[in-house]
Amino acid sequence: MRLDRFLSNLPCFNRQQVRLLLVQRRVRVDGVAIADPHHEVREFSRVEVDQQVLQAGRAPRYLMLHKPMGCVSATVDPQHRTVLDLLDEPDRNDLHIAGRLDFNTTGLLLLTNDGQWSRRLTQPKTGLAKTYYVETEQPITDAYAPTFGQGIYFAFENLTTLPAELTLLGSHSARLSIVEGRYHQVKRMFGFFDNKVTRLHRERMGPLHLDPQLAPGQYRALSQDEILAI
Ligand code: URA
Image (cartoon, rainbow, N blue to C red):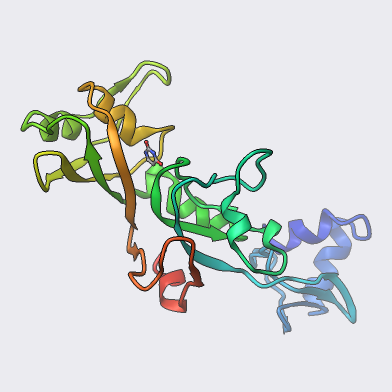
């Protein structure tokens, strides 16, 4: 949000007072005096006027988890353990999942408290490929790749999936890259051919690969380079 809007949304200042505060350089964002009304204030910014703290700011957090089977991509579940239960972190309830995985899907799961970052990662318009290793009950024939490339009509949402790239690895296994994250998307795409997915593992989201050092259930913080890559 723009700094002038952030300040005038507070009950203590009207727009004229905000203009004056900025001109008088009495507003500090992350310790720096700011006069530009367009300066962006994020949920992580510390905002002060004179010595008064208006928003304390908090640290953005980014984690990569190797999701195991049999665990729900949700913050609470009455029956099963959730991915948050795997985290030994303070304030883990502040985190949200950037791109859920089904109960028995394994692989790369990203958790953060930074909504802008997770939107960039998951919105189809950013076009970041999510790559899955897939095993199926029936053989995967040569007809699949061109059909996935053209998109598959999902009647429930009344939409056609964006072009996806399929690479055959064996008679019953393949690597699939999609740029969306529709509900059960991969299973439904294979379902178009009446082929049941028996194993599903997310290897990559855009430039971020699942760290091979992480065993199922383990996690680590993202590096600065990984955070900035999104
Ligand atoms: N597509 C699915 O069908 N399931 C997942 O967990 C992820 C993508």
